[in-house]
Length: 329
Image (tube, rainbow, N blue to C red):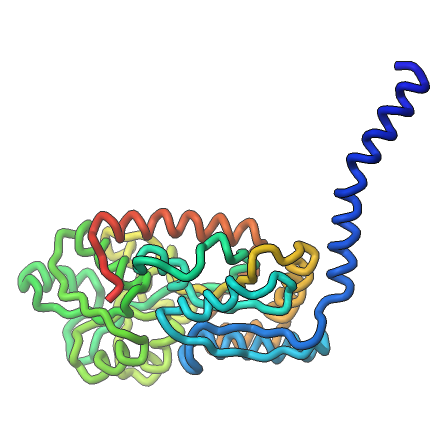
């Protein structure tokens, strides 16, 4: 290639690269100028439960370490659909974020139509997770969930299991019923509170809840843990065996909390928020609070890891929902 031609090629390449360079410089500038005023964290559930306090602990720590002005906006309704739609339709300027619970990813399978698409929301990070716990009323004889299945096979349809409607627990129990050839009377509830209330009252024989939700009742010995749904035992309940250890045909299942934002938020802003939340969550005081209060295993996964995890979980859960014609309530 002669000298003049080489110069021409290089000049042409520079012209082609210029828009990309300009975009990158603009994105960096946007991140440097961000945030612009008040930041909003949408929680698509009412106060109470676990998602709201998780969000408020993070909000307080972020404000302390960055000086940002952050507010929590509770937008409950439709099993998190209302709040998710608010975030999906928000401007992609990095001013609106969402902290939500695992049931969020099941909405496309349970709702006939949604006011947003999964692709409208960007996976920022999975904050952490905890296994679910299956507990029995103390008056019931069960020491393990395997004993529940054994009893249900002798009394088909008579052993009741409380679950949250439109949740992983509902789908997991449908899978367990089918794979273990057992007729359990699975009762879906509108909220985690009513699930616990009826278990405490002895209305249901057993119930499955996030370990976070049921831990106070386990600690007060008002319910008895008979299984956990993780891959291994949890330090919070070292004497409670997993479903796999009990020989129950199932698969690992976890309750988890995640962060999303509107798709289109510049990646430098996403990365900056990811870094600050990671710093907040992994600070010793917050980590200990999450362990003590929620029995949470801290993850702070990268966006690509979180997106891949959601995709694999949806493929698994949606298949079970379709094959068993499971309704959300």
